[in-house]
Image (cartoon, rainbow, N blue to C red; front, side, top):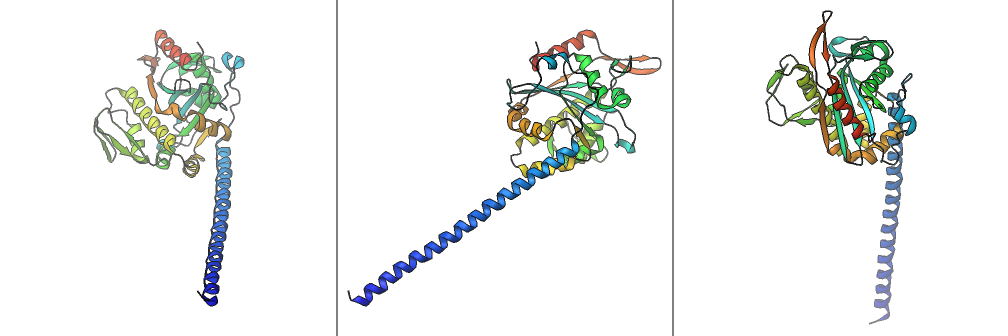
Length: 327
């Protein structure tokens, strides 16, 4: 091999190495930019989520602390403490209403990470019970109308003798926005019926967008079980929504969901609480138990009330205490 051939060969090798170095540097630059950009996006979304949850956050003034929480406050940071949430569907905005409204839907939800179980207790809106802060008995859904969130929470605490740690209130008109934000839900109707433009078939799994889910959960008069039937369907919608939220793994999805809720939802959960609950309690949502508080209708002074026997209240109270590990 002559001298020129050796020189050309060495030159080509050096040139190849030089090209690969350039390519590698370019890739490293792009990778660095990608990581920086991704970090910025996450940071921006995180800040947006904080701002959104800040708009929804509303402290409860005047809530009476349950004795069990004085002894052992609930902490969600480590994901070990069971906790309770009062879910209220407020009828402000429903059928054109603009006044304060009543808690047309009331459910007490307990989440226990130690048993990986969530329990949803439905409370009939006409339940005849003492309204704490008013000094007399009335329909439980009037507590919110009389004294807002604190009176509703205090009344539920008194009814079951358990702490209500958190609350979530959503006006009825926002239901469809929430369901749409999670991509819709699937439920199996217990009966066949039509509501507005929608039809539902007993036993047939049905995927619903927000408008359809709202129609499904509202119908009451055509249900042979009346308000109890409606409460069952409302629990199905809430359970389906919870499952959809728990299945999401991208923070971008939560940005959309929380954005849709910011104008119509109030809660005393702050941003850190929500992050801790999502990270530490997601497994509990996969196992949901539905419980119905039941009584019988009775007219008192010309007004319809749902009278709940003491033994039924004790049954549900014992169930809740067990789920919250208060026994």
